[in-house]
Length: 152
Image (cartoon, rainbow, N blue to C red; front, side):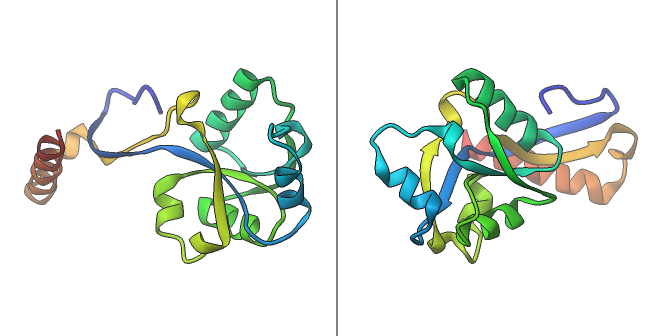
């Protein structure tokens, strides 16, 4: 989330933009996408997260684009969203890191990069401040911070 509770320390090690994915197979979704140059997002079925930051960011994107999203299914995880899209059941907004590591990445296509209007996900390490004294956690924290410094 944009604001973390005060008792949690966070260090970033990367970033993953959100992308909109669609099936590659011939199906009603891919036919709607190829039928016109301008995508009518309100005419497409969406596979969405049941809750959480992903769902909030999708709804934010809908509001910014004035889209009345039609929800086909609500699922608990991003991997399930990729699976359902690969079967031709709808489109979905997922973190690119999930897509890049999915065994089904060749069965879907990126149709739009939502990063211009919706923030992606900061990837990092979160720990309770009261646990930071633990030597093992402190070592991992130091490594995570050095990764961030190297990336900049």
